[in-house]
Image (cartoon, rainbow over all chains, first blue to last red; front, top):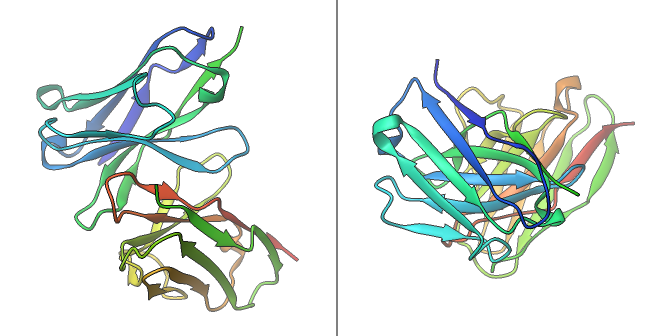
Length: 118
Length: 107
């Protein structure tokens, strides 16, 4: 089955760090650009970050630039999001997503909840 | 950043109604506009890509139109399973952005 499975979410104190993982199965991620999208409780979707298929190009939303780092290990068929200096405003469900051939998300993970609170 | 503004933020409609949701970009984005449907507790689902192309497996009652700055998503005859929140999303530049969402509720 073609799917993305996120892990690594949880409760973390403000200023802390967390690393999210996104494991792909049923396809090889080396052929795809990949993204992270988040959704705060009861709020809308917010694009977070993007990485090229070979990892050479990355982009970030202004709200996370300098604090979050996206990476990938194509050999492990897995993408990551390292989140540092976390704030309460980073509390959200984080979705990993696959970019289709015409610049849209054609496959989403089920999401992992990150809660930043003391 | 390119801002995406959807209207309305919510609407109430009945089964069988024709529903139209609009999305406006803060600058021209050509046809780099996608629409997603999200149900509570679930990941979003792609409906329309490149402004007007129907994703495989999506019912034909969904359609999209527009280019430049103004776009619409139309549901020709609302079905019970269509009650959800809909988001537009631009992929014109490297920094993608979503609209704030339109919640479609049962009247």
